[in-house]
Length: 499
Image (tube, rainbow, N blue to C red):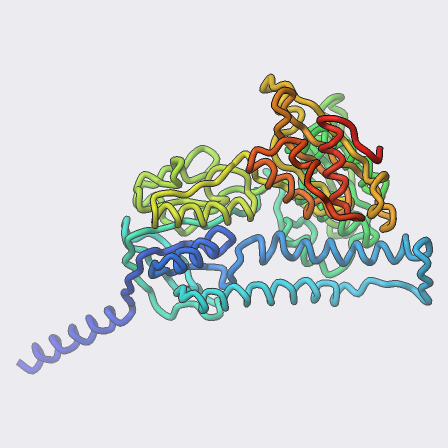
């Protein structure tokens, strides 16, 4: 009897221990992923009255964009541009600098890290302000209405035990990851992804970049300004795959003038470290002549794009559909095969842009609340923060030609803009595409100073169906760079004044 009682007590004790290892919670909405799509959706859901939780495995909110993408790269771009200006433009601007202007790599990186830390901390404060419950851990499906949050070893602040979150609605916003290059091993030291390129401890003498898209060109700009010899290896015959062709050519011209070298129509055959020589040995092939060439660089950046990230989600456990490119399949209301499980951001269709992801997060939550939500995918701007900056929204000339749409062009150079001239920063132009009959704006392309800020006016005009004349008749302050946008619209339907 004593033995039986003891065994029974042990079983009860064991059962209690097991129960203590799992915490059960209930929420109206659980969002998996704390990047631009996820954290914005979480805040919006809470503002709309939902009991909201957000699960993030990184341990820091903001996703790729804030931690190892848009934000840190902009810090490096801005500060490298200031350094480059001091070296190349101080004298012509009437500024005498005594002594050498040097780059302090440690402090250069610290300035970037400080900006990231402040912004990630700011999102946590917004979660507290809006009463969003934040779980640090891996979120995965137990079933269609239960999300399991598991601790992540070594992650500061991670949940201490498994949590089971019962929920009426799930929003998947797990983002994307770097696309690997077949046969090339990324070690984040000599062969790096964009993540490693953001944190190099010294400036490489030579930097080779596989990929002539936005990521590659931005990071190339940073290190070119800091003294690296940068070579861009691009498989396509032009850089900036989604850019308007004319703008892409102008961009390459300006970057080449700054010292960057380009090998277009070039296929990378192999790349491997040679630690004896402290270089990466790269073999490339011209796709037109099939001629091979051997290159060397101290660092190789692999920047061939990103792919959806669903690792650890257990999407297959509940039968979520994934297409050939690894994207979770949804309908036009962001629904997966389960109407209460929605998907937004990089992990599904569309351009992998933080602002597009934010718009989807808000729209998806609004659909949950009211049944209505909308994202205009014809009006998603893109920006490359090189110098000059490049920004565009709407259709390119190539797209209009392919669609058989008749159009007119309006162009205005920054060389004829008074503010650009006073700033001694007048490279580039504004290019406007309008419908030949209605004169409604179809696309806007800007290469020049502050292009990323100026493109917002084009987006507003597109959203409300404005014509070129509508834009041109809005009084723009003088002297401003935005006057170039006005004059380009004037040139599209009539004639510009200052050119």
